[in-house]
Length: 469
Image (cartoon, rainbow, N blue to C red; front, side, top):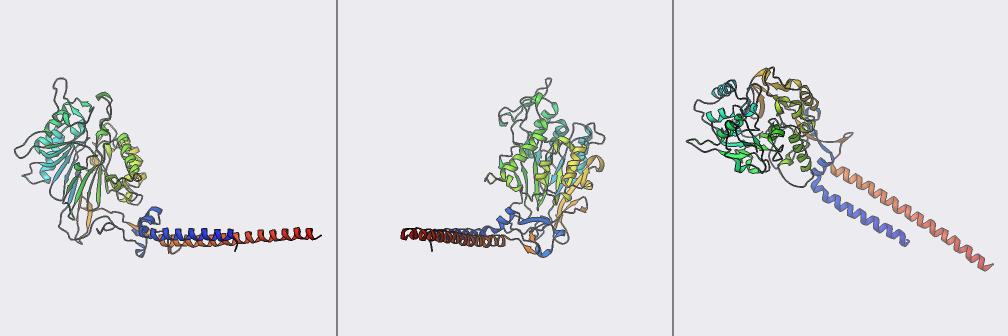
């Protein structure tokens, strides 16, 4: 065998050995590779065979197909109420451990105050005295207007506020007690409604002094968690705003963008709320999520995978065209899951803003949200959801008394005919092809080398003949 052929043979065999070792080692991460390459993908359970379903890996926690953990039931529940306060926002939450939260307080008028009082009286016991948590998303009056009424009536132990200084009005100035805790260059808001809301946050009661936070998604300690280590564990997480300021002064401020994007999760069911956050805030959030997929940093934004899907979205800014983007909906939903997602719009009947805007509702529908799943307070009044156990021991999401249909997403392998395209199959078939190519390479090289040797021999014979002549 010629040296050149031996060299090719040695190189090809060495390559085959190295590739074989790499492929063998890669089998340890076959599941992750299959997901990354799309060999494993999520499909609607109703469209696949039961035998094709692959059990997901979830760190030992058994999760049912709709996302709700199965197991022994204690009968706890999560209740989320979107209170009809007209053209404004007010959300009240009852957590599984009995704690409560209020988000925003609607406009500054007696009708809104009455709506809040009526809801509290009809929902809680007569000795209800305070909320555990209160969140003011931003300083506009249709969110903070009656927030002071709510906190003066039912103080909150922990309060979250925007990074905006309250200074009152020219005729009635106010010194913000939380000014020193605000981020640098915080701009001011000079309205009586906002000053009243801030004042109510810092009040002292006979039982406690409220702890007030400047909403900051970079501070993971602000994440609210309950029933930790139990099956009924829940979380309430802030994901925005990601800038300290949205404007350089009061006259050019984008107040809506101070609103936080918040995700409430319990038993695998998720609620997304965003106050009046608009395009700048939403855009920063989407960019953060996209960056998290490749930055190699482990943080809370890693949860937004391609299979992530919420169950309820509160439409931003009462359904405004500026507060719902296609990219935002793409982060929060999947093609399969969107058909079971509810969109809640808090708006007033015949409001002068035209809320909800047609363009925003069309974006929800384009994302896959069904028209019948778009719920409006101006049409149906208070909107309540509950996550609780059924008679069979499974947790479901209920709208009112009706159990909602959650599209079941399951993992399945892609197929070529009836053959499942697992990484082991794809990898070793590819390796077999590589072996064939290497063998062909050796044969061709050998033939080429043999041809050259034959030609060289013929030339040598011709030279010898000439000498003899």
